[in-house]
Image (cartoon, rainbow, N blue to C red; front, side):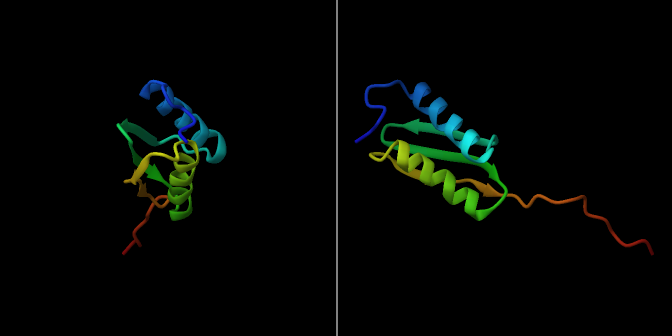
Length: 84
């Protein structure tokens, strides 16, 4: 059952984003709800964080379909080229 039944989409979106930020520090995730579909876009550092973001949404909105369009962006230092 949807734990947010009857709540406006903006409330659902805010709650899911808050959960993602608190659980994993994910701040660059955008959440859109359209009917019974939740779309995740933005970027995360690893495949594990991408999967975790989908699990958070599935836990909070079990009656919704999750479309996980998050990009995995490797976090690292600046790339340098060898000096010739």
